[in-house]
Amino acid sequence: MTVTRFAPSPTGYIHVGNLRTALFNFLIARKAGGTFILRLDDTDPERSKEEYVDAIKDDLEWLGLTWDRVERQSQRLDRYAAAADALRDKGRFYEAFETPTELDLKRKKQLNMGKPPVYDRAALALSEDERAALRGERGQGVWRFKLDHERIEWTDGILGPISIDAASVSDPVLIRQDGQVLYTLASVVDDTEMGVTHVVRGSDHVTNTATQIQIIQALGGDVPSFAHHSLLTGPQGEALSKRLGTLSLRDLRAQGVQPMALLSLMARLGSADPVEVRGSVDELVEGFDIARFGSAPTKFDERDLFPLTARVLQGTPFEAVKDEIAALGVPDAVAPRFWEVVRDNITVKAEMAGWWDVLRGAITPQVADEDRDFVAEAFAMLPEPPYDAGTWSAWTNAVKDKTGRKGKGLFLPLRHAITGQSRGPEMADVMALMQVKPSL
Ligand code: GLU
Image (cartoon, rainbow, N blue to C red; front, top):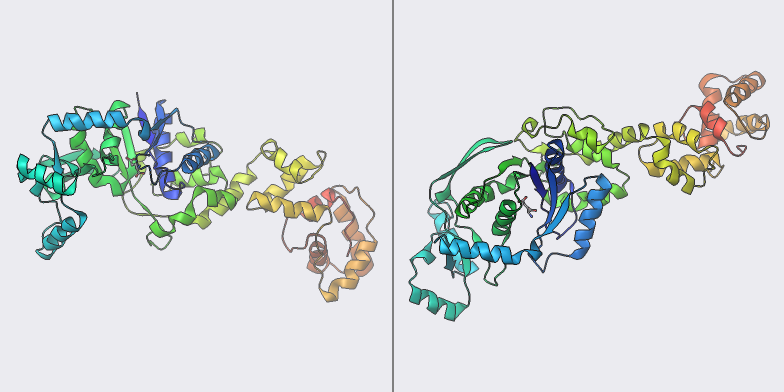
């Protein structure tokens, strides 16, 4: 049974970076007919907010990434305490008392000597009395996991064979001085107890994975398959981390990006396969293979989302937008045809309103001074609506005969005057939908 999880910390909104993680885990579970867990990594009570929990769920729902169940780390603290006890019993857990300043100093010294800044395990050498004395002086220490100094190896689903020398990694702190259990331990306990079989996350977690593999083994759990996807960069290869705040799913949604545009891009970006606009989340499952993704940083340009959004809209049936069109005030009788004509001429849904304004005569006509008399003359020849598919050609033929204008000189000023723009749907289609007679 395949079990995956998406494990955001509810300390902010989901952005395009974590969307990749969510989507890959979701697709792996769905493709295998397995379980996809939404796990909220909310062990940090100061930074975790209910508002973000709601927002994360809301964003995933907007995308259609449905989860099979929700788990919250804040409700599993007893499990983490039990795991900490187990590690203590196995001699894999030790208390350390260095202050952050002391640790910093140690690191600087190591770096100066050209050595990797790895925790020197000074705390391991403390006697029981020394520990008691330090505890009296400084209060509780932090708890570190004692790594076995051997090579940690796994075959990564994206990066291939990985081998990390445990001696090059600091013994990870799993419990803070204030007793708060840290992600590294909580995640391992959850993955093990929830039977997680596949973990996909960003390549910034590779070192975590190395230490977590040893913790899982120390606790007697099964090591899941790991895959680390590359991190997104901006279009020029620049780090995206600072901009991720503005690349939240909320912002993209507010800008009119369609969920399937975002998902279609993310399901392929950084892989060997071309981006194809898919109509539904189920279609994304087909052809998804984590092994097709590369390890190189992946360039992301949010501007790519807009042509994709336009294509999604072109393929969107009337039924799906019916309510939004009705909300604009478009009468039921014209609404289906309105959508057919307009969907090929918008990038985001919000632009529908502009076309409805055209059709109900609520725009300011754009007429160049030299065309004013011509347009006035032409409008005078136009009957009152209703119009139909033949209105435009009958009318412009008559105008052509009367004024002698033809081609662009005939059509463009009329298009401008009626729609306020030089581009848009076929004028025959626009005319057939006009609710009022155009006027100057
Ligand atoms: N809460 C962690 C994060 O957002 C989860 C990482 C993981 O998938 O293990 O980075």
